[in-house]
Length: 292
Ligand SMILES: C[S@@+](CC[C@H](N)C(=O)[O-])C[C@H]1O[C@@H](n2cnc3c(N)ncnc32)[C@H](O)[C@@H]1O
Figure 1: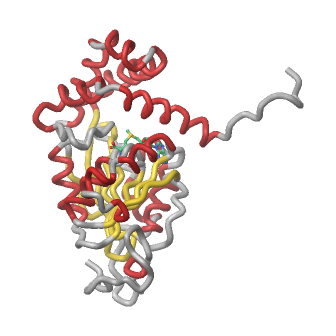
Figure 2 (figure 1 turned 135 degrees about the vertical axis):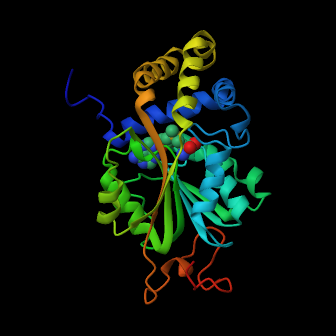
Figure 3 (figure 1 turned 180 degrees about the vertical axis):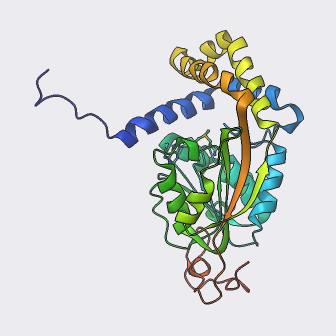
């Protein structure tokens, strides 16, 4: 091939996002994947959210309780996918929302879901393309961060935790799902220390591996339906994941981890001053300067 006419190869970030873009685009064309998640989770499946993750009703309850956010404050949904989790939390907790994801397709879909969740008050939430390791968000700007089934996909998890820690306001919490081999030492103590955070809670999610087991077996059993509705390439991706992860599930441990930035009384509350979605500079809410 003539090197002067060859198309430049895409940057690694663009190559990675292309895979997620294709998945989110295929998923939007059919409810086949959502139906299988619903079958695997049963009554625990939150239909409105339609997450591509382990997000079930018990997880939503835990996220709500661990974030401990006040109305009007800023929540960040890191690796938000199509935005259902952040938007559900923004509505439930009456907070503002910034979501970001590597995939432009997911971000477009999330943006289109704001009116449904926020009763038309779309200015309260914004979504954009960014990476866990480089969010582009200001220091100390978030009063809470959720990260559901996304950290494991970061190229550099230590850098991603440091970056999310940088964005967290004093006293605020980063709540994220993590999965590891049973009996292994979680990397989170060292990651938290390096990010200047403390480990506040480690909530076990003992039924999560069995949910994945049911889901992967459903993918395999319904492979022909998936091929018809999602196409061969996406279905092959899903089947590869199912066959790779299934044997590891009996030895997996799933947790919800809450890391907190220590509250320093003399630290200025940068988050209270940040003009986020639905806020203008100087638009402070009463009591906003007191950290939770
Ligand atoms: C399993 S999905 C979870 C999405 C969402 N949190 C949920 O629970 O529905 C993982 C998401 O992480 C995103 N992602 C993967 N690597 C990322 C990175 N380095 N930075 C930001 N997002 C990333 C993918 O595009 C995908 O939307």
